[in-house]
Amino acid sequence: MTPPNEADPAGGGKRTYVAVAVAAELGITGETLRIWVRKDTGANGSAVRGGSGPESQADEPARLRAENARLLKAEKGVAVGARDPAPGGRVFCQGGEVRTRRWDFISDHRTDFGVKRLCRVLGVSRSGYYRRQATEEGRVERQAREAAAVAEIRAIHAEHRGAYGAPCVHAELRARGRKINRWGYPRLRGSVTRLMRIHHIVGRHLRRTRRTTIADKTAPPAPDLMMRDFTADTLNTKWCGDITYIPVGSTWLYLATVIDICSRRVAGWSIADHMRASLVTDAIEMAVAARGGQVNGVIFHTDRGAQYVSRAFADVCRRHGIRRSMGRVGSSYDNALAESFFQGLKRELLHGRRWTSKAQARLELFRWMSYYNRRRRHSALGYLTPVEFEQRLIASHTLSLAA
Image (cartoon, rainbow, N blue to C red):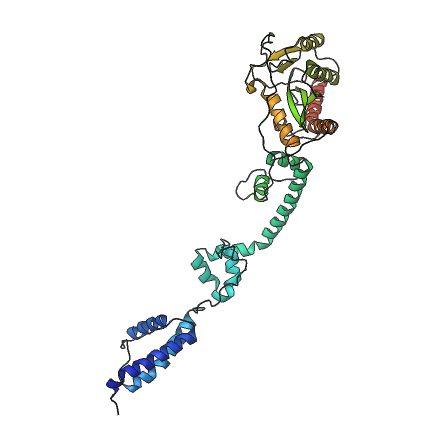
């Protein structure tokens, strides 16, 4: 009979086979199982490897199974892949990374691991989790209100042809009686700016323009009576105007405007396929008629384009008592209000559009002018329309005279 110490190779092979079988049964690696055994036998004061007798060899599988049962009882889900969240679950996003929605993760796995352990691992407080659970109903209501607000914001944005940004959308909502915050201050969930940013609702942006101011160096210019002061307290004291181009197919239309600086209302305009002096004189005549013919002493500020320094334009202004004012050549700031109006026109009406007929272009320009005066809210007027602003101004002036 072979002595036990001479059967070591066979005994070691048997122990290795048993350890491998137990590790496979548990779903762990053999090295992990050996580490567990070393820690347990070291803590109990036993030898790392069993004795050379037959009794220690027979007890090793039972000891390993007992150690495994103890570890499984202490730690749930130690096996590879055990209790992992299902692929495609809401706690996973593209690429398999766990989202930062820690509260949802805790709610989904609280039955498996317990709230206390999950909060400790994720670095959050249990009180915070339970507080969030208590406010779940209110949060659902806020989300429903935000969804309704987003739907109304989209409707306003579409109604104004995608031209409105957050300030004008907010003003329109307030005018309709909606109480909603404009900016993204903390804890104020109804932020128009935040909702538009999240849902990718943006107003139109500016683009480069074509030069239309061609100065006549031989004509004497009028003095600058405005000096970049584009403010007025009463109607029909300061006007400004300019010319811009409208692309139509392979040709152009030209638009001249007359704007009342006090109310930002377009009092007169003219559309033609040329840039002769009659383009600007027709706009002036329309503005004078719209204001009842009493415009004596009003200042009309323009650039030094050839149409505005022409004799025909000077005669019209003299006949109606209009005082001409002109800015410097090459300085858009000297006629900033008119430039700003045309930028808004091209951003809101012409952006992404190309008309093929002049009749269609004239009709669309007429519609937009009417929309601008009666429905478009202006930031300089406290987000009132030009017509609303004029009505309030006239009403307040009437009340002051009556008092």
